[in-house]
Image (tube, rainbow, N blue to C red):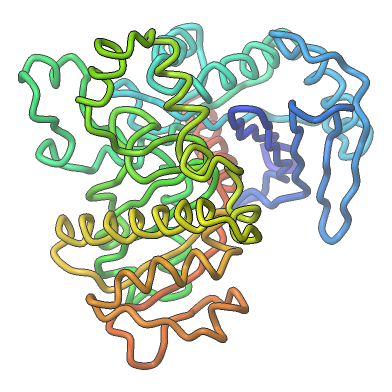
Length: 397
């Protein structure tokens, strides 16, 4: 397997991130990465190779099966990176339910199990299924491996995972699963490298992007997380509501006559920062706006992140560090400042200059809690897990 190339897919609700890795003895080495925004016309493959950025126009039509898009993308990659030597494709799959506790090679059985979990993550799960099926159609003999966002949280206790519902429902799978696990797995490993004294303690990691959640880590192990049964739970997000009194849903359906489909659309696509502000789902737009609704949406976002941090600190029994990661967490000082201001009662203090520079350590000298900014890399985790599965298969042959 050494010397060959690995391709990774990390699908969002309307984007496809991809990574190319050289398979080497120790760990996969990134060759380049890219993204296809399926909302953008004309369709473009944006490639980053070292310091070089390029936009590659794609002629393919966007179809339900994505065959044309993936075929053209593989063709360009083959001409530029010698992808004819592909060893395997690794996929991020958001929901693994109770069926998947770690990465697995994709078979007919595993693919069917992945597909049955689509109702629990409708924005992402079927996108993964489409990509898996597209690769199967185009390269039927190519091994594919799934990495599951929920797997990292399997270390949580039943006490944390249980809802106060009839016990039979828990046994039937109605429980808290947690998401963004690939990101948290990377952060736990990276924190061990850059700040082992903090990594060995109690840390809350905040993955703040269009989708957002927090995870309570004890010595790098997931003990609690803000997202639960679905990707709607926890803190408000770009267009998702976050935690919500279920009585609101009963009211909307029974008293307002909304259909389940209309409620689902509102909760996933018209709530969160977009719903509160009425302006945008993008924190950058809201930061640049003078509208009071924009300020309120940002304050609500920061407040809920801080409140969830305190909740997770309760599970952990203390708090030694906070890690901000993902697009918003890594690049937006205003959001980090707002969160830490609400956590001042815990002794959290940040250095304004370090925060403004997106420095790796942004806590002030008198802070009782370390505050770090660590870029995440989900694709690296996908590549490493795919290689681990492939090496295990080789050893068994």
